[in-house]
Length: 457
RNA sequence: GUGGUUGUAGCUCAGCUGGUUAGAGCGCUGGAUUGUGGUUCCAGAGGUCGCCGGUUCGAACCCGGUCUUCCACCCCA
Image (tube, rainbow, N blue to C red; front, side, top):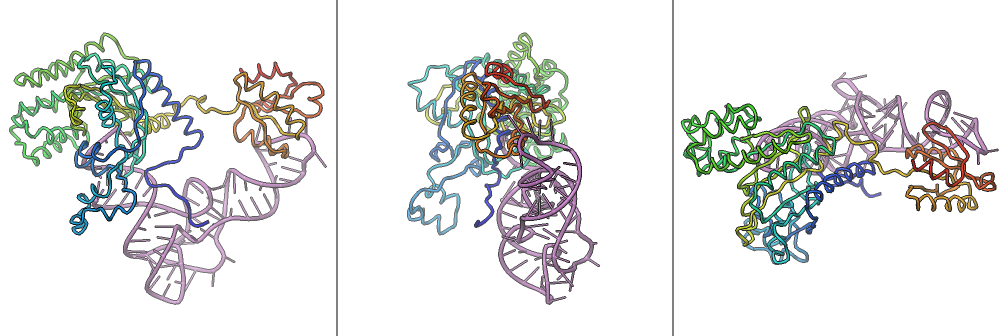
């Protein structure tokens, strides 16, 4: 033994029961994706650096895992950058590949690359891990799964309506009640900036506004002022801070605030359309809310913005997010293709379900019956029965060693296997099996057919 | 990237102002019980005190560095 083995920070091992629970979430999401007409694709774990770099802002670039070139990469390194110890500059000369940071940008690349093979509107889903060189904290990992559904090639607002329903369908079938699907619209945010005459400070403005529930009204105003937005300008949208009431009530106030902004009015129209449609269609469990402070970091959103927050009382960042990006593929030279999509944060949903104890007991895919091993002759007899059980769709196994009874029973107990079969000389002679229910401790003598029936139920 | 926090047995944790053989509960292994697990009783195994260095007669304990854990900021699923 050289040293204690370990895994990199922000990564995790998953035990059998954890994998079972994760699969349960993934299957639920996958089922709903397919019900809504999305088709799966997969893309490589790593992409060419230029595909990813510059797509997520400076902050994002810092968080992208870069892969060192093979061979004697330093020989080809940029000498000037090397001498200056300029990490940023030298990276491009020693690293040409990087781990995927999200699923949206690789999807955009996919669409552009395969545009001639795709039938538009193209609806795809993708469930794969992504990597970020972030510092881990609650619900934040350096390797985690995203579950994305996007549609490209359709400007229709019905897509947004469908995505809200998709969110609702997934969380409802996971048994997670009380999630809030928050909506906003980039055009509304642009409208605010226009109304206060600070259109060029849109990003600073929205980033500050996004922090409202964290640092409060005064904190937001202070940050806006620090970014050079005058207090007179902020005064003009004071009513934004006072927004309350239902989705439609907020809409009415916003109509008034944004009366002078064409783009702002457009954004409100979109929100109103979606809300009206959903009011008609209804949602199973989720709440829909209009949250004008929702900005989200990704600056490629151009229309709707979604974010899903966990039920009240669960301290967790967003468990899903998404929005419309009119020109995502534009960065890869294919303009005029609109896209809209949402993402589920599998790892965070896991933590929320765990915290609320919402995993069904049946998720753990456990073997139903263990056959006790009494020796080679008996084992063969058992394996014939096991073969028949497996053919009938029942998970069964033989204890591989002729170990002490106590050890074998204990093994079944520890693995929480519900049934144990004992078949020794007596049983073989009669062509029977002794079936033991591990929970009740009851035993009965049965033939193969009865065995199937009892264990199968 | 910034600030804080954590690390002692497989797990959860004690361990006094630095003092000699580092403890508990649970778990694990064996036995009581040669075709019967969970309960009980008995016995046993298991620790470079995260790692490296320093101070000291002496360090799990003090100091420095480093890794790790968790949390907040930034950003984000």
